[in-house]
Length: 464
Image (cartoon, rainbow, N blue to C red; front, side, top):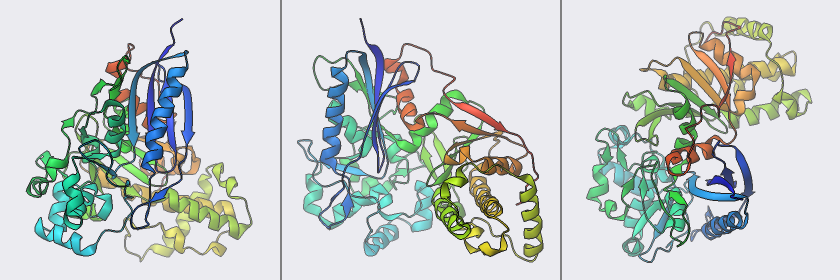
């Protein structure tokens, strides 16, 4: 009896590395997770253990092949971005996988931006805020100028998703979702590599660009499965929404960062937007997506601890507090009286709640409502950066805050003219990675039922 046709997706985050098998209906039929101990680079900085990652790919595939209940049709990869693997002419890594949080030399950064038009102009052209090592092209520029002997040995610099694909195919590619995400490499105005890439000769180290929905044969004879070239995880997570919804929408993806994604906004980034952590990246079909973000999930974690400690409560309690419109009305009336003379604050680095005195609240429930009100005010300021200039009627929220009734009700109240939905889907990034190469392995039509939606009607008039 033939096994179930499946696609294997490797979803590699900074902390967890996961393997999923999806059947043709995009149901998870197998999964495993691993965590690797970090190693260090030559400067003693922590970094990913590239060898552990390599071995994990092959061990996982061998396990799938050993299971007769599965018939492997395809493999694809999604990983975090801003990470490059430098291969020599024999296809072996020359260096550790440097951490994108590694400090970048100020003198070299100044030299770069002074040479190529200044931070403001350059950032607008590449849709990349100035982020040091998080601009992955700057990592390659650093090696060229600080370690020229090493630079000469580099045959190809591959972003991490393409390196993982290379392990199985032996073929080197560049993917637009990786080079188009705050790398400093891509000129969004010219839709081509930025001029510096050619002037510095960096282009010689970059593999040919292939479509993100492309798939090639595996390197091992006798195996008929196809292999995708890999995707940046932010772009992968958007794919299920692009496949299922064709009317303009914004997706607010909530986790440690709350990221607002608008695939229907084609207006160029302004310097002011870039300064407020706005950027553009490429979706898998090669079109720009305008994105803004703030550190909402991290702040939630910190402030919930503060509230719980002050009111002597368990932090778990705040996962299920119901929305109370009366409390919100009371808090907004109080805030109006306090802030009539204050100027509009716009998008702050953190919400106002960090400055609030907890003794002014009658209960932890009231304090938590105030915190989420402050947080959603920040969310709206951030989301507005990508909403301007587009005709969006729907807002989808996925991730942690989609399950928070206070957050969802308040967001709906701030956007009475739009439809606001909490969206839930098991493993959006992995499913998007599988959907990208659907035509290469799946005999069924694209699914239209993989995203569950919960509509939030306006129950309260919010004021910003």
